[in-house]
Image 1: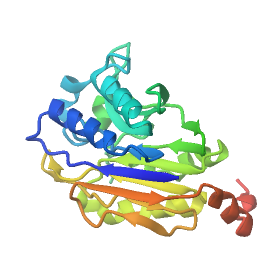
Image 2: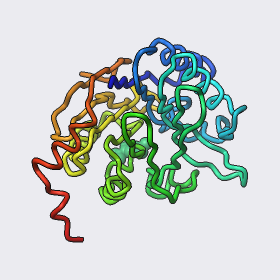
Image 3: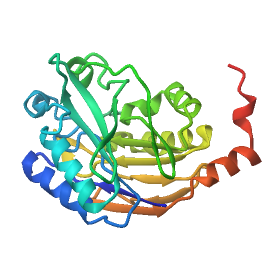
Length: 260
Ligand SMILES: NC(=O)CCC(=O)C(=O)O
């Protein structure tokens, strides 16, 4: 199957509406791919905390990002992991919520980020934490969902493996300053989970935080199959075979030796 990561530039001088149209058009350009992935909070920028309340939107057919991404998935005929949005839940709280659409434009899965970044500031102060790990079954296999800072918490990935995930999809807005952590942890989670890793980060710079880019497709043996070389806007595509997950787990059965 073909997977395509859209490493979009998220710069503060581009209005959100324009970036939303640009994202939809980039997705439409990927007709023929099986799965397309966008980064974390690409509408606003993961570090543009002051703007979160203004762009918060419901996850509903008429939420602007939900509507645009559902339409783009349908037009392109692809499974779309639309990255994440600032969700305003019915009770008024904000969540960092990832959305997955099927090729008919239906919302197939939603994941509210469990580990919020910022310690007692930023996202951690403004947003509520999700509580439920999420997977989504699609024709080729099962995807496990996580978002950015979640990558630092291996126990979440163990839960996704136990739920049957064969590919882990991690949209991110990871800063360039910790780019080595991003690449290292993405590979580590692939190796320890014996899963594909689809790690899609933003490019550009917003809120004075240059982004890491370096989006990557990593196989269940930990080999990097495709990777953006930098933090420019890039389309990263790879052919992957989810059957490799069972092969790696059979030929090197470390997951069977788990004790705890
Ligand atoms: N948006 C994020 O979750 C940023 C995470 C990060 O910067 C880090 O883990 O380092």
